[in-house]
Length: 462
Image (cartoon, rainbow, N blue to C red; front, side, top):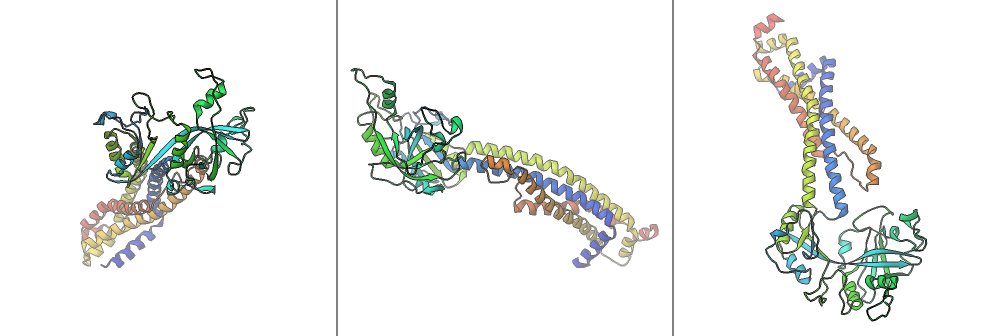
């Protein structure tokens, strides 16, 4: 018997018993829809976690800090270091880390806490110097202007985070976004903006304190900065570039050297005698790997070199493991429905055999191959699984869309674009194949019974 004949005969038998077929298909449909929807929730949660973490920073980067600056990170075991030498984040460190395997780029950053003044408003901000071209490579979206470039060290050209406006407040009236909900009435791109970098002398001057010789502290220099651009986003749209101000790292070095000539720059290490180094060290280095798989290994290597390295890889991997268990549990819950459907298919096939004993007997008397008889029942069971799987998939996509619509407002508040339910193509294809296999497995034992029926006994019983 040809495959075409098997399909025609099997489908015709299913249509002869429409109600029973519909009820059996309904069980498969519910089972497939349950499994796909449950697993899609686990996949969606995992993708949402990854997206949320990527909004805070790169998933393929390792942040390196000076091991002597007092920072400690979860997962960082300083005891693994095989050196007691005090190592700082210098240009030599950048070159040293660049030579490590699987490292694509090492980006130095230099941070300074400043006072920002514009009109009647002021705010404490963190000024971060980065190499030219780095911000463009991170695909930072600007609402206006361009990225900062080097000015030769005479002046700072800065890029403002989109939440800098939130931080400005009037020190006399204490009006501001976080005080009374009013935004500062300034235009950072066009108004004159001053940065005070020497914060220690600024606070001494503000408090009216005097030096050891009795003289008063002088107001430190106000640096006029040039606005280059502003990060895109609303007042509460957070990203890793929202809260800070960025400039060219070489320009920042030049200004710090002039501002703190023969004095210790805040945040910089000192010699054993308490004197400042001639070289300005970086606050942190961002080491980028080729893939996320090498992050943990690279982090361990850098820790062993005497630095303090941190990444989100360990936390993300542990969270993804938890998400995997959640997916197994959710998939198991849906599998219960499919198991019940498999029992229904078995029952349908057994009833079909009892009702068609004469037909089976005649086929055997006419010399029909035993495996053709078995194949007929297996195809019928597979068709039930296929039809139920297709309908179940359609229902799964509908449920997934409804879930994402219901959770859409919550996702927008969290700044996420991915839905909480996600059905990839591999899940759709795998669930359809699984439904067909479940149907055929459920029909296997009834098909064996059909093969073993005696032709004469089958005809006589009918």
